[in-house]
Image (cartoon, rainbow over all chains, first blue to last red; front, top):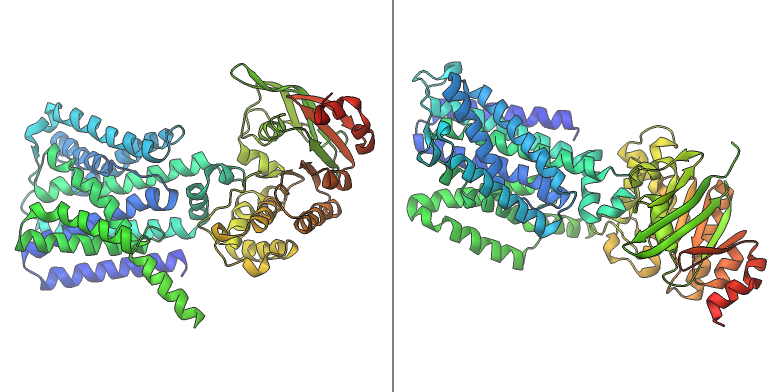
Length: 317
Length: 245
């Protein structure tokens, strides 16, 4: 499918989904749960642009997420910025830090790059904890006015709708990158960077695009978080579980295509929501761990790997 | 155009105190077939790496079609027309053989092959090149699972897909059987018709003598001979380097 048609279909589906849910579903919890799952769809999709397509493991997704969240906090504290402004700013700030992280790939590869991103996350965490303007370790409140924008019933629904649109946008971007010339170049970088460079691929530029876009999408996902929770504090926004989930979801869904992270995020995110309600949120990371072990041993190419194998077998017979 | 296609003068590269290349001059004319020989560790691959941009030479100048290559990264050099194969094959292992060729077709071939290619055009062209190398039956296979001889062919095919003016083949025949060597030699000899200059780095003298119009010899980072293959072989210095005193 042409990228333009795909975008049209995805956005049409997103708008339809918003229209149906906001008119029929009143249950607040539904919105909270779906918002969280969609947030992970974006994070997983964004992580996969760098991790799956380019082969650089980012262990600091939470940092980019928090950059988005705290950009919103700063803007709101300064001049009560509306949500869309927070989204754009969050994405831009995270993109710039992503660009900076991209230059790390000049010297760091593999596990060393992963450690550097984890370190980046810790540095930013420490910075935020000690920054009084955004509440430091106490956290910060964002209370939106009672009337929601654009005629939504309440802010929860409004932010849910924005999240659906942002998810659609991320999916369109991820698929576009994957099927374009850029995606082929990134795949070459993943397989062999020197051979890629010697085949005409401008590896540094491509890696910078990859880290920037990946960072921007993560920042975008985080930018609405403080509006939605009405409160944000560094321990939860920099939580390791965000970083781990962003890696585990594409791994479980399949890293070689845009659909993998979506499937992984919906599957893992939904299980976590169910367990949180029925048992306890303390189980969430345990579930991630167990599923990861299962998938790494039984289906190293994730769910999409199964699908591809099944397709190939059907074609042959 | 006058002057050589590639002109390297005074190329020097050292790793710490060890001089891998010392004041090496090396020229290749348009469409010329040059053999580059020398014992292991004599600097052949280092010279290739300096020409293709994988390493930076510490001293000396490398001109391609009269243009100074200093500071250009490898992807810019292959776009100018300098392609190489790797001594140890470096396929894009998670891609099919066909997709391996798509990379240079999409990223390098446009500069002197005319327009940017679309995915489909690149696919057709890649199939065409694979045909010349006898790899078309394996086009849909994952390149990571190829046999050694097919990997060597893929290396050359991928370099060809960049539509180069100069192809540097770095020991494409090492470890292959005599039939396989003939196969690859035939492919390299065929480049002449397409006007592609070839530098063949090789230890297999039978192949070098059959292939080369000119032979250059590197020993311990210095070029000790350069000229007609027969004369170079009779050169006492070359004999000493290969056979000892």
